[in-house]
Length: 627
Image (cartoon, rainbow, N blue to C red; front, side):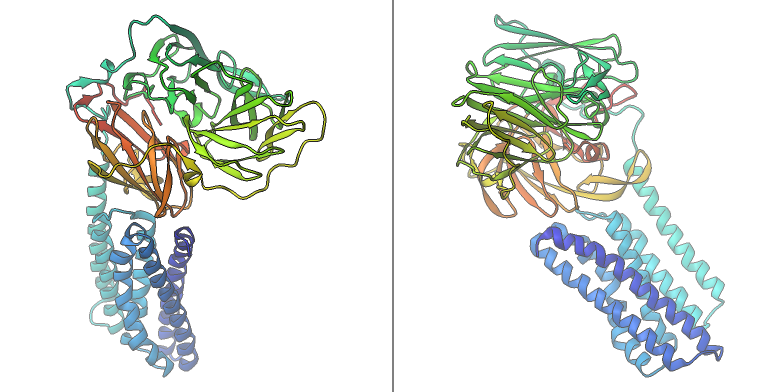
């Protein structure tokens, strides 16, 4: 069984275990009270209790088996279960099986019969807390609460059952133990979660990110001006959508330059309620041009401006978007396409942006309104076609091409050598780009993405049906032309999860990295020239398209299966998956790395990559909100 299926099964079992032990313990207490007062049939009540205990033991055995199976996929998936949840549950559960169950089958009630199932109920409830609040690596704080809580509840219950002391006193002592434990846990958690009023993400070092900028002097300069402002945009259907735009359009103006030119973009803002920046998604700009408020610059406020300058020496398909509250502002329209051409484009060479406006997935070509349905272009047979498809949404989209064989010529802006595909489809991660290439035939061709698509037609013939072929594994599709290094200078593990964590001083269901939420996730520290290995583990039930700024990563393996290898800057780690990727530290700075499902990033799944000797003078405050 896959790790994703086992994770889903374990989530069901943790609830089933808690409910079944809870019913067993509750039924025993009620039956015990009724028998002591001479009401009800003891044997019938005992048989029902025995059945409930047996069901609870069966669920417990299932969770134990699931934990063992998960450990086979990696210790990350099983640690908190094997080291805390099950050690709390198995001793009383085994005692219930060995001592309580035989007594119940003989119709005997008594303290020794009841104590183990009831203690198992406390431990099973603690298991739910572990599932919600503890990931990997293990945190000692929940252990400080849960072990005393289960033990205190068991002692108080034993006192009540045996009448060895006033019942009220026993429960008061147990309550005091639990309260003190919870207070210690809360205090430690709050102390570790404290945030100053103004937070500098990186302050050590001798080189300031403001010194890591593009060239001040250049001869071949392409200048653009983008103004962020609200506007109502019109979809191809005529439907109006209130949006945040660059120059009144969304997508914003397509920025297309030649390799070797210097790009200069002057960003201005007419937004009254928020700041704005420009992040060059997938493009390796100098750190000071990366557009992350509070890390590489201050957000541009209404009436202000910021000038970005960098050399266009990295040909490929990229895009730009704001990084000030991007989960809201990007999705509302503050994005556009950025393309660097090595030579004059041939044939039909067009960027295609996939974006959801007002609940409808749209397809937008350069300088054309988004089409909420099919966009159509007429091409002559024999025309070379390159579709530079960018997924600017939060979720992955599945692409298909029907009517002609095609290849994926580039992934995330970098060339790939791969086989020809026929009716096969490819899943494009949030933030990712695929260059789809083919020669226009004498019949229509459909590039499909769900309910939206792009129809290319020679002027005759019916549109083909959307592709329904199998999904390819992009990590094994084709080679990016680089072999993995033989050794690595450093290694890091990022375990992605969804847990209750303190965010903004309040316990909330959050998306976490190594059990923490941004900005408390420990940075990955690197030095210029190093090769870094990252092991990225998804313990949750949703995909996480991870995106390190300023770098691509070389994918080494997915779930232990060796990759092509291939370079990517937005790699989609599915539920239960384990990816190994390599990063070459060749772009100094303090860089953001985050899940590009931007809701997840805003809920904590963000960290940064910090080069030795580089510092940031900017701070997170009322004007800078990078997530």
